[in-house]
Image (tube, rainbow, N blue to C red; front, top):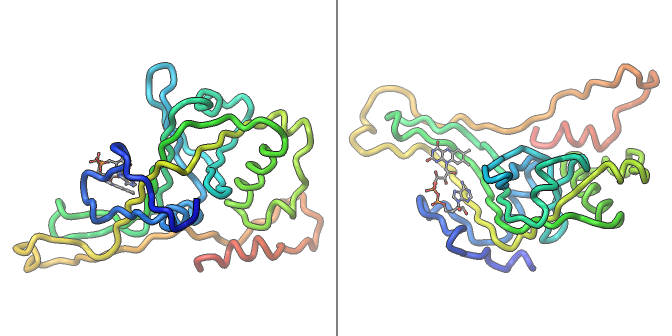
Length: 221
Ligand SMILES: Cc1cc2nc3c(=O)[nH]c(=O)nc-3n(C[C@H](O)[C@H](O)[C@H](O)COP(=O)(O)OP(=O)(O)OC[C@H]3O[C@@H](n4cnc5c(N)ncnc54)[C@H](O)[C@@H]3O)c2cc1C
């Protein structure tokens, strides 16, 4: 599917509230996913909903989530309808009225049937995608997984075919009578930042911080 293919509008992805905040460009979906690191995986397990945070990676139109081969939620998700969300908090929106406070965000919601990844080739693809999503350049810098580690790892694939994107940006929206009230209103921007890397005490003295880690710290600075 190309980035130009519009997002599906299905009964469950059609925004009810604030439809003007919805995006139908697939490119917007990919941008929200590619800028994130953590998703929330929602499944129904033993008749009750469970939502857990987890890392993810994207390859084309597939989202990969990984975990231990003993991970109950991942295994339960395989073959099931799941809902995955990725959220970026971009700012706190302070209005004059408490009622009109809001948050600026970019958010994607994906529905689909999760497929258990089988076979080492696709498992390696999934692990690489998750690793690179968190720390671009890390896959080549670290030792590759060995057979025993692959056996201890599970991954699911979720197709990016049914998804919605909702984005709020900009200043608060107070009702006209409230605009004359005293007091501050505006947006407090928010962003994820990485700080100075802390070397492992077991590191050989003089080992320098590699470029891909420096890049991570610089990103968004
Ligand atoms: C960080 C953050 C904080 C929020 N805080 C609040 C809050 O405190 N109160 C509140 O009412 N709302 C909040 N929202 C918005 C909330 O996510 C819903 O969009 C909103 O509550 C409408 O819910 P609904 O059940 O009417 O959804 P509907 O619009 O009926 O949902 C229908 C479909 O639209 C899509 N959709 C809905 N919401 C989103 C979304 N956020 N991102 C992508 N697709 C979406 C989904 O596919 C969903 O199945 C917040 C959103 C974010 C990202």
